[in-house]
Length: 244
Image (cartoon, rainbow, N blue to C red):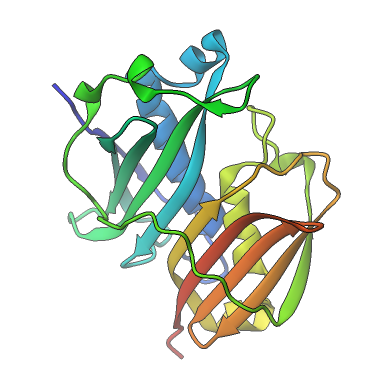
C-alpha cells in the first residue's frame, strides 16, 4: 500500500531570517531532505542510485507559501509520489502548523538518468507505480515559463559549501541566488509568497561566478540563472509587502 512520509520538527532560530521567518535555503532543503529520505524508504534513493550508476534530476520545483513558517513553530512535513509516466515522476509536499493549518504546498517533477550517458531512463525499470499516492498537494502543470526581458544583473559566487554530497550545486542554492538578486532593500520590505524554479542544465561546481539576470515588476521578480551564454535555470518569485 502506498503511503506518505510524515515527519514533525520545530523550526529553529538559525533556520530563520532577520524577521524570524524560514529562510528560502532552509525551506527548499527541508523539502529536498524529506524527499531523499522517502526515496530511500521506497528503494529508489541515493543508495540504489549509486549502486546502479543512475540518478534523479529535478526539472521543476513549484512552491506555494500560504504562510511563512516562523521560529519556534512545530511543523509537520509530508511528501509522496503523486503521479508517474514513462519518464517523469511527480512528488508533492505539504507543511502544516501545530494546529494542522496548511502553511506550504509544493510539487516537483523529476526524471531518472543514466549518469554516464546522461540520458533519461524508463521509470518502470526502477520505480514501481504502486508507490504513487494519487492525490495532489499543489495541482500545477509543469509548463515552460514564458520568456521575459531583464533589466538588471546580479552576480554570485559558487561557494564550496554550495556543493552537496552528490558533487552538484545543491538545488536549494538556486532559490538563494534568485531571492538574493532582488537586492537588500526589496527583501527588507517583502516576504516570499511563491517560488517556481525550472532547472535546465547543471552548473559545474568549479564555476567561479554565476550571473542572475533579473526583472522586477511590482510583486513579481523573474530571474535567469546563467553562466556565460548558457541559461541554467529560470526562477519566478511572487512576493507580498511586509506589514509596517
